[in-house]
Amino acid sequence: MKLSSLFAAAAVSSLLFAGPVFAQSTTAPAAGTAAPAGAMTKTSKARSPESLECSKQADEKGLKGKERKKFRHECIKNAKAGAAGAPAATK
Image (tube, rainbow, N blue to C red; front, top):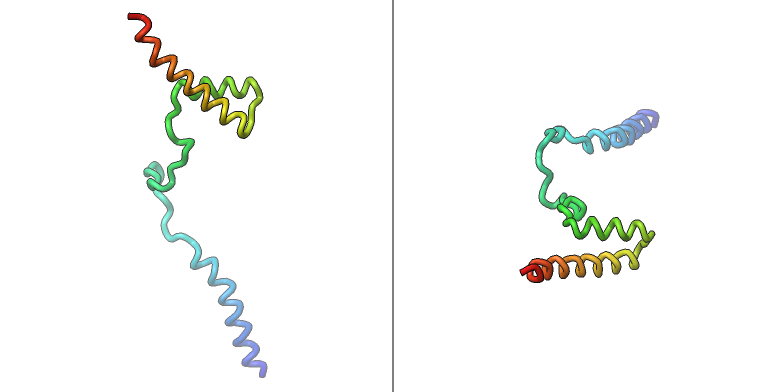
């Protein structure tokens, strides 16, 4: 009876200690390598000057959530419309 208890305890402990061993990665990612395409986030895109300016204005007004999103949408739309119409007005 003692021998079977010893084997059972050894089996359980080996399973507990084997989990982290198998979970570890064998190779570390190389420094400076490009991230996979799926790892790109929305914040990694370059932001337009209009977007940056509208974000600053929204920060100054203290807007958050849906109000901020709506304000930025309108602001960017107006900024791009104004920029598109500006060169035509100078001619």
